[in-house]
Image (cartoon, rainbow, N blue to C red; front, top):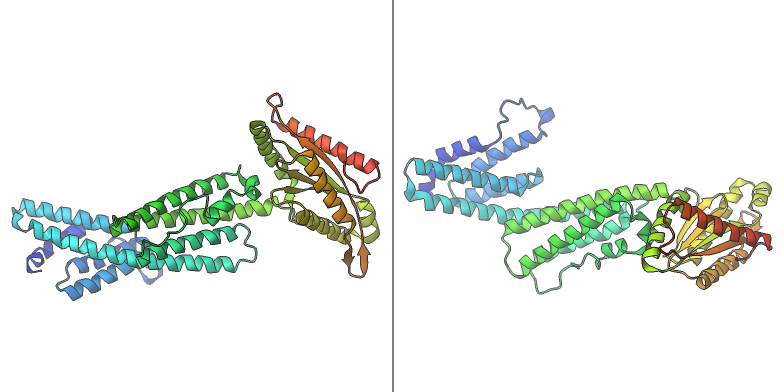
Length: 426
């Protein structure tokens, strides 16, 4: 320590030369939160550490510096670059003064500081990361309508499991799922129920962020298992993971907004404006794979009479009731749209004519046999359904005209069901 202390004036000069000059800014209690003020305070704490005279003082000042750095969102790389730049400047001074006998001592002194800072920073950073993600979970839990945020919950829990894995230092135990397609969040992304989001830029960004995040996690696990990782490596990897996680959260929030605008406010089914986008996607798949799918159009029988007799409020209740029948009867992979008024369109992926007819009859039967109680009123109503199989070959273009053609075909089948007595499938 005696050798180092004689270089304290040089160390102070190096810190002053390296640090951002914020002396010209006049601080007051109203603007103490400015980041330049944070950096100025951090400079003082770093200098206090480098000029410490005893082990106890070094330990205490290391803790103060690291805690302040993390709590004020100063990156580890900034702190590390400060140390590297300062020691290089100091070694340059020693070379100029021809004091080469103490170069090893100076190097060792700064290396010991780096090791202490890095180890404590990793420990504190992981604790802070756990707290942040726990708070994120609690905020999501308070949301009245989570929608896609429920899947982000599973992603945050995955992050927390990764942190615990690092902290426990028991690397013989199985790590969190590293395959981005097999974790709970990845399974949701690959599920057919999210297919209508595939063409949105936000979904594609989430997909790439999620893959990058798992790639980083695989490196974290590899470093830990092989005991290759210096704390600085883990800090860098985990900071990137946290960044990707936050970006995923932002994009999920955008998807929530898209989901909200894509749903019919009365029935909460998909709206007609999404139909063309999904239809184009399914036409592309059909053309590439040679697999058929089916369109099913439903229209409530004598719905105008229900509105005229009981009022539009009861009519709305009937629409919501029928929406519930569709959701309960059809499969999770099917797309249900409120197409307009009392008309509903259903897209049945990879479904042939026979299976589509069977599903349509189930909807018909479930509707006809269902009693709807509205206050003291008991209502029964029926539905007519038209179906058409869609199979695209290389001679058929995929464009709006093709979509309109299939809509017209299924509409004709629906009209035929109406003409033949209603409460039936064609």
